[in-house]
Length: 434
Image (cartoon, rainbow, N blue to C red; front, top):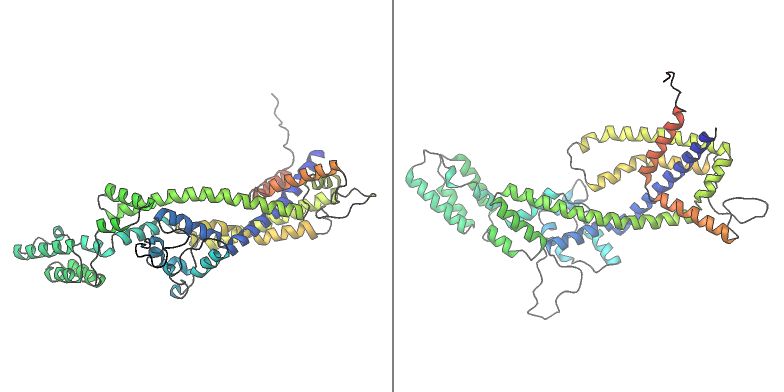
């Protein structure tokens, strides 16, 4: 049937494009991993949000008026966010890398790549974790603990004199929170308030030798940046409610990362187009020539359809087993962009089998690659020897390049639809008459 032959041609092309599209993505992932591209782009975006120093020369030696700017990025990733640099190791303390403050950002090239590898920069920072870390940096947890010791929380049976002593100690700690005022507050906490005494004891151990800055002082110490503006607005709207501040700041961070993701996808699409062009040219993926070969050779079409069915069966098996084993890992809703990328790794064995089926299976002789021109054969793999031949070849390669940029998920999904359409056959005629 002509319509069945046309469908088989589409199945063969979809199988070929699915395999090579996955090769494009694999090449892209390898290049991004070697260059630590995601990590460096994320650091650059966070430095822009935090107003941290950008790559470039620092103050001139001996310049007394030159004060180094506050590197808020280093304070976060050497402090509350340092665990993100552990890289998923079981012993985070041994795999967090050196201090970021001792390694200022490089201007680019291999120096920036080596620095990212040396510092073990993360490729993903959860919004809530980032917001919590920034709020902790501006409003230390010791201040949050002090807020839980408000005089209004005292039991009603506390005598008036003891209540007045506690209020005075609390006010002194609010103005200047240090080891002395924290200890005085613990001493003034009545025995009738055991929860308060436990919090006050924890506060004493949390306060170091230096006074703990207030929220206003922490905001004033931040360098001018988008993060400072967003945090100040969140503090005003939340009226000092720490949980609301974290929630609003996390929402602002998500919006900023959405803009970064859009820019990142546009940049990666350029990379993918380049890799697709290289593969199409290297393997001579002439869409027109391959489609013609599939149309003219029935055994090749049948072999392509058989290989497509085997590939889809293996893909479904790999996906089901991965889903069964990954339910518990993804049920907490904390999936990162890396999780979505890694989910494509479950189809790798099936895709590699598709490549072998396309290239090596018996009877599947698709015209892939280059051969020398010959007068006694019309092989589409031959190097064209005319202007018209080159135009047709370039058009076929351009179609393949465009197809490979669609991505392996698109082609595997389309391949499944085409195979199901072929298996269902023509729609039966209705037995009812109008």
